Each structure stands twice: as C-alpha cells, then as structure tokens.
Image 1: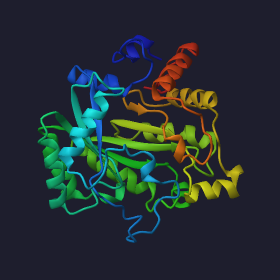
Image 2: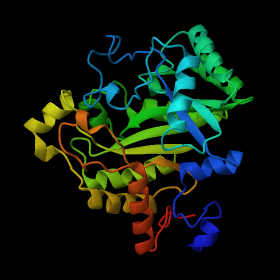
Image 3: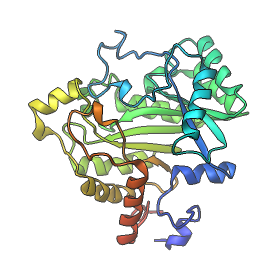
Length: 321
C-alpha cells in the first residue's frame, strides 16, 4: 500500500478524503458555490409516464431553498441565490455553478433544455452548470448537447442512483434498475462530461454490509463525484409510513455511528472520486423523526476529519492498485 502522502497528493490542509471544495480550488484556484434553480421540471415517476407519486422517500420541498420558485426566471433565481449565499455561509465564493436541482432536469425536449441552460450560462458570474436528473431521462442527443457545452464551460450531470441494488430500487418505487444507472453514467463520462451520483444509506432492506459493498461497485464506475446521504424520513411520505409499519427493515444510524460507518466506507472507496457530501441536512420541520438535531454540515465535516485522524486512515486505504 502506498504511503499516505503519495496516495493523497491532492489533499489540502491534511484532509484525508477527496473533498468537493478542494476539487474546485484545484480546478479554479478559488471557492466555487452551487446556486440551486427550480426550472419547473417534473418527473416521469410522478406524471404517470412511469408511475404516480414518485419515489417513496421523496418530498422535493424538503431540500429546495426558499428563493427557488419556477415562476421566477432563471436569471432572477441565480441573482437571488448569489445574494442568499453571500449573506450566509459562503461569503468567499467568487464564481457560481447554476444547479438545476428540483426534480428531473433533462425531462423535456432538447429545445427547451437549450433555452434554460443557455440562460444560466449567459449569467456573468456563472462558471458552469450542474444538472440533476434520473438515469432514464437522458439520451444521445441530450448528452451530445451537454458535451458541446462542456467544451466552453464546466458541465456536470448528477444522477440519482440512490442504491446499487435492484431489489431496493423496486421497493422504493424508483422506476429504473441499476443497469440503467450504469449505462447513463458511462455514456456521460465517455463524452467528457462530469458525472455525479447520489446514494442514500439506510434504505429499507439494506444491511450495513450491503451498504459497504456499494463502495466497490461505485469505485469501478467512471464517476467524478458522489453525494452521500443518510436516509431522512420526511413527513407524509410513503417511506415514513413504511417505517412506521416495518421499523425493523431499516438500519437507523445514530450520529457517531454514522460517522464511523462512513469512515469504513471511505477506506473502501476509490480515492480519485470526489466526495461532495457525506450526510444530508433536511430542515427539521420536514422530518418525521428527530434525526440528529440541528447539526450543520461544517460540524459533520469536522467530526469526519477528526475520526479519520483518530483512526489514522483515509479514503481508499483498503483499495488495491
């Protein structure tokens, strides 16, 4: 096994995992911040194309900033998002990525996507776009267009994979299998477009061993980044009702337990893949259970850094090659 310093030539400030902020500092030499946009998209899992009601865990309003309203223009949402971030946690950001976040942001004709993405990219403070979508909502024409944009600006697609297991995807009413996710990730990466993924830990029927095995599966995929979340039970969702009926089908992590679990995961995870985040922050008013209380992302990161140091370990420590 390589020494820590050799394995982690990209590490800044002694951080023992491949952090998202460091990735952008290496790319641009400064902090870059996402600005969320709600462009009025829907989802084939909601509008009846595949199903009605969406994925069993989903309530999009639980993670959409207050300034994100589809009645506002893309430009206005970006302006208000920049103002919002400047007055809160991210005052040092100098460039921004327009993050098409709400629902499935490639689920429209190509002409409509050109108009929406084009407006975002014309904003003088926008360095690129990040498009959140489903693996079954892209095709060759849309990916070719994103590849064209990527020749001039930063472009990434974030796919909601959620789990690597078909039995889980079926149970949460996801509407696609893992083979579809793999195809979309590979087709996007082949075109030179950045590829992100979302994974949820704690979905029903999955054990800790199942979740740890996902490190190897994801590590073999051509991903740029992954955003990890602990399952948060949102009020009035089918998932919250399922938990009430079958609580023993769920692994529920305490905060310290989750940090230790994620360190175990990181040791098995490809060190070249950026960890965008390792836990979620839904507003408490949306939660069906108390969760971890008011713990902010900065506190979670400090806990992760400390635990990695205490265990003298790092991302990819157990990865061969």
